[in-house]
Image (cartoon, rainbow, N blue to C red; front, side, top):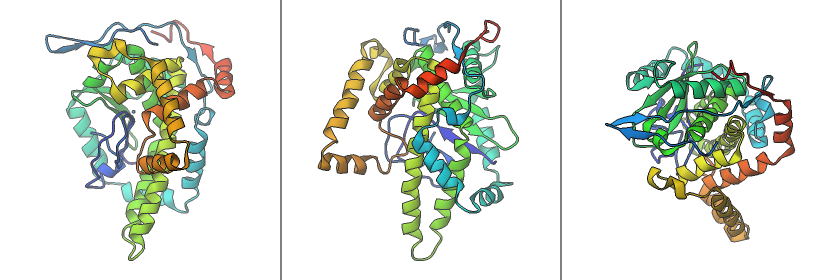
Length: 342
């Protein structure tokens, strides 16, 4: 495949002005957007000293590893359903490969990210390197490269390019906002997009939607309908990747805390945030939207969002953490060895 940019923390309201920007989508405080980007408690957040980010020492007990984990083992039912619908569209796979082959999009994205970020390695921000290696091992996926990029907007995204190693980019403001375990949960969310091949279907669906606008007369209506269907799939895909984050964090409060901080957190008041209160807020939203009028308003509010509301994502991950499916996965897991955990 050609370049596929998957972002997973923050939402902006800009529309794609080019084909390149239409290949993007994100993961945090939702607004009306189209595929935009620029995806345990107790660890200290990063601090700044002399203008440089200081990452606190990352350490955790040996986590559980899912040796034979398949994407469908944790894929959200709505994600499964909508992915099958995309696969059923005749010729979409072939059209996508033909249109994207040989374009400069992948090279532009690759050079733009590499040229403006710091590549993480054993010798460069080694604790972040350890986090993504460990997360990839837990999810049974090859680890991508990881870059840190200077930005005041908390965000993270993934880029997968045909024939090249995919990479994840995280923003410095995100590093400062989250604890170490929360940050690893974000990395796991990004890995979930790669594990589930979300980028492939995102690109194909974009091509279908953009192509529909060229049909005389009904093109705009068809494209709008397809776009709404695509948004439903994108929201479901984010729920899947939140599950990937839980499989790595192995503590639902870590994942919920990420969502809470992205909705309204700041480093100076992080110690006053309360996960249980945020879950109660989610239940209040469900109650307020349960009436016929509330249901209509809720649908109108979320229909054009590429990501579910943070409170709804928090409730979803809380419920899945107590499900039989999640417990069954934990029973299949094995302890990560000390050698792997280095």
